[in-house]
Length: 182
Image (cartoon, rainbow, N blue to C red; front, side, top):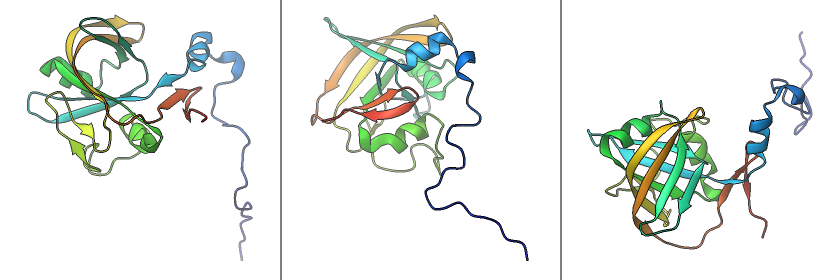
């Protein structure tokens, strides 16, 4: 009879990621970026056929002014960029700690059986769908986009803002989601 030694429950096989890039081979720019905490947001839009698209984005900046502006870096090959460029509009919603799985799904890191918008409740807005229960979001009009590093720098005018309950943010820091300590 063949027996396999099973590790104790909770035991780790490796203390570190065996596939991780060695420290000395990592890009200093990526290491610097990883040390800047960033808000986790969800960008959504409808394409010309009214099909929704979305992407988790942690490089989003809101600029105060009249009108308010929004800057963000997204993947120019993403479905959300295709929808934004077709419609000229999109919604952004800051995500909170309860939305880790949703953020991973829209980042392509977690399966979404039936599609990204199949699970959960969604509120339809003129800009893009907003996850049910997310009460703070903004509707934006695309002004311009251009290549910027390995991303697409999107510039937009904020046309509408909904401010809901004051909820703690979900942050991205050093490759992981973090929460503010209370």
